[in-house]
Length: 547
Image: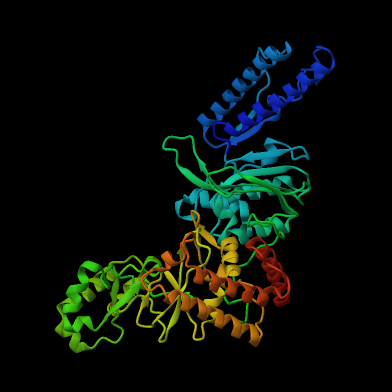
């Protein structure tokens, strides 16, 4: 998918410039004598070494022409610098730009695989919901039995490149959407590649890339370079500011999550890996067309209706949980027929739900019109519970969950869990869990996305001793005490990184010491990078035993 050849043009230009610098230096060393690097054309770098595949005819033609222009410009500079340049007229040799579907063509027909082959590109970023039927079929054909519906379109180029590399020492690198190294895509993409012997040679962690196209849309991308068994010394490029410059860091190995770590993937699980924690589940899903939800402007009207007011409950999505935004819902699981008959408000809202569900294209939703008074999916606990937002800002230094009364209804924008003693609250409030979440969880742009199967169920918490369990619960209770001192602050305000109350910071520090001891024993984990390395070791150990 070489498009108009931007990557090829830049690569050709830079290689010619390097070659010219060598010629200049040799000229200096020989007292001004022009030294040709090749006894024939005088150059080692030629257009015939450059190849591309592009599905559209016009961009393919532009790529060919752009490379001729780049060659002409390089030759002019060579003449100005060393006094000699090749004569290209008439044009006989050019780059090989093949007009074809890059996911359908055999790449070895374009270029024979060899140890010297280098593949670069910026393949298209197209998620599942935006792909055409033809594109999905292309991806299925490329991946075969390993196809997974979550894979981004760009993943097809990774598989094609790995197949092209084969047993050679060829290398590849792609600019890609960040999602291929986050969340549920990691296992289906990197699992087969790692199993085939592919290793990551270098990687740029997520950064903001602004296109030069009209509109200058900024996207969050990564760059991943890989080869067979990773023969080069790995280098990781980290970004303190995703809009800033990277910091290079030599590492022992790079994990598919683009962190220093072993080449392993975290496989989603239907049950928690740890026997010390219990399951989480989705919150309550209305599927109601908004008719069971009471916004601020309607609240007074419902509270003035004696029959309807009985069923008004606080309702929290992720935003309401984090920012204490007021919102309510009608919770009509135990609706009294007498109240229904007495309230026009209840009748109208229930009829609105029935009508909305009846008109749905989904058969299961149409069936739910028969129980229009209740949420489409009901998961509300009978006792106090832990509420976990699905999405939180990447700026958070703590994953901000909250214990709620059973009278507060949590929407499906949250996860919920029975947590009678507060252990789960302590686990999710620890720095170790946040490090795990940030590494293996998915993201919306750069915001953290909690998941049940990919994050919670894979968290490698060993079997807790009674002492560690008691200490964790007690540490979590101290966090609750510290929070309670600031009743007018929302979770978002309490956990503003630059304005956290000092006593809350201290309470979390105590929790982290207890959690680190429970996880790692005497091994020290002074920061999240160290914690992650130890967590991956634990994960590998625990999954090997269970396997």
